[in-house]
Length: 339
Image (cartoon, rainbow, N blue to C red):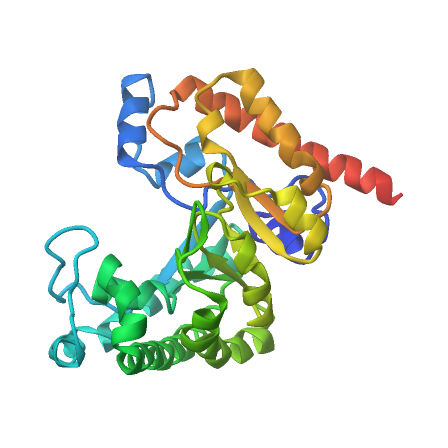
């Protein structure tokens, strides 16, 4: 099977002929890349080259993002760009621009041939309805904005939903992605950053604007939210979401429990990045933890966030070798069981 066939097979809870997809859904940290160069990784390899160097399947990403590069930048990470209606109106010409749509369309044109022949799978990135207002209000002010500026929050999310639909109309003329990833990051290590009522009021209505398009095309929708997503899963399913990632183990996420409670939820990620620096026994033990869920289908194991710079090149190569072993084992034994 080719890369795209494997990917779509797992999203449909089918068993690939040869192995599960082997992906890194996000690029490696630059510090990780630099460390590996000091440990023998060829220095001419770019971050993109590493996917082929390690023999991983290519899951390419097309970004539809609502903020252009011309927009004023926050003064520090998490700082606000806007504070109220007037400041939102003042930067509106930097948001939801035709140039952002054109950039996504051009990227799709570059990927189209490889996508059609199955050489790559494609993930569409959409700014989500928790993520995007936070990018404008800043981390702290965003949480107050649910109470202080509810009408503006709705206006922003309605503008974003309208833009996403406009952008996808143009993009889907060129290429239909294999999955949509909605970027949210609305959970942390103790659970959601908003209540179920807040989700239903400020997020769910805008998912409802997008979901009919995805359902009509048969495209699976996964939400990207770090931390412990467990409590939010019923909210997401009710909103039409098909799956979640990256399922961070450090936050206490238990994918075996999730699979038991939600047998048709697609999952991606879940491999504890913090064991990768501990050597082969620990790396194998983590695959053993995930293997029973791998057997159930609908799960693409992958590092539960970018590989940290504490992981040596030797340990990453060990991870890569065992990754392939378990991805093959899942399909070989799974097909034997079917017979």
